[in-house]
Image (tube, rainbow, N blue to C red; front, top):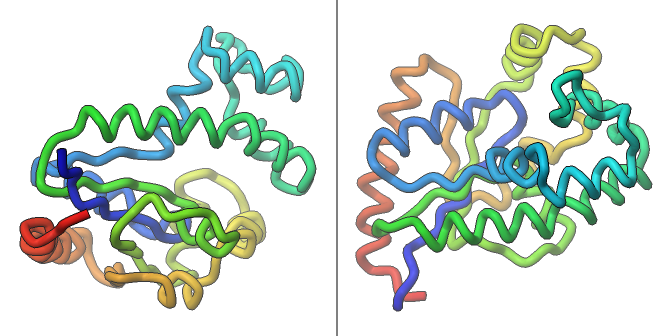
Length: 207
């Protein structure tokens, strides 16, 4: 059976990816979100959570027994070995969960929301998508959004941005570049136009 066209949605942190994903979902496009899959594979009682605890200890648990994701993120952020260990545990589980969700999705095309898609491509990882859609935002606005959202400092926000692919690297690998420099209403209208384009591409798609 022919599979649907797969659009990889990505962009820098706080660039507007969630707004774009929500609009696709409102248009009844299946959205498979890597962050949602990542949370699912470390839910309470899962083998993923057990593996994380075996490597990093109970200090990464919240009081209610769930994974304290921010604490874990802070732990591995500046430690390349720890980060590599975490990725070795989680990435296969996340890929399997995303594939399960893909297999249960129906429609002419689907959106795979993968925040670190470009970083993976730059490392030479095989592509899971047919087209890459990059949400592009001004870095100063990303920093402001991060500070408002997470309550950290501008310096912490800049460090997070510096650890990700640059705007130029994303643009170079994008099949579709979606600027997010205006209002949310403008961004949603831009997604509507992309939706029409993707329906046309999906109709002619032959994997």
